[in-house]
Length: 149
Image 1: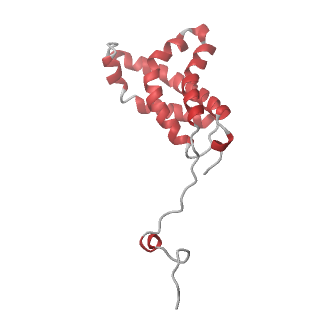
Image 2: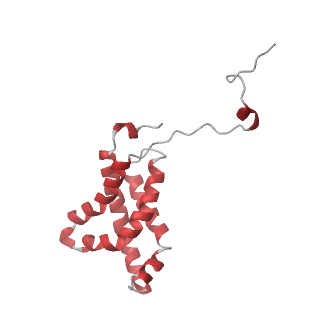
Image 3: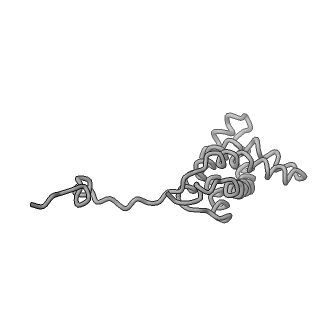
């Protein structure tokens, strides 16, 4: 008599032939938070002479910490990223945040007419902040988090 064991058949295999599990890169939480907070500050400090990077921090922080953090978290878990990938993620996160920008600026009493100005400034600073985030994160991430699991 043939014996059915866990190694030869399982109820899950009979009912569902799922895709093989994709390897996932884990997020180093300490490196993620430190890089997320340090990136805009580093860009502001390096560009202090122009004053605009310093002023960009309070106006871009809300969308950077929401959209940027979400886009970074999703991308980091999928594959190791280089500088160009972080640059592109910054632009994508900024473009996604443009939908929400009129609501944020309406509540800040700046007026809807300021949205195009902040959109253009965001197209400059979002990729810079994303690039700085990527460099900080890759440098600070511990070896355990740099390999797929």
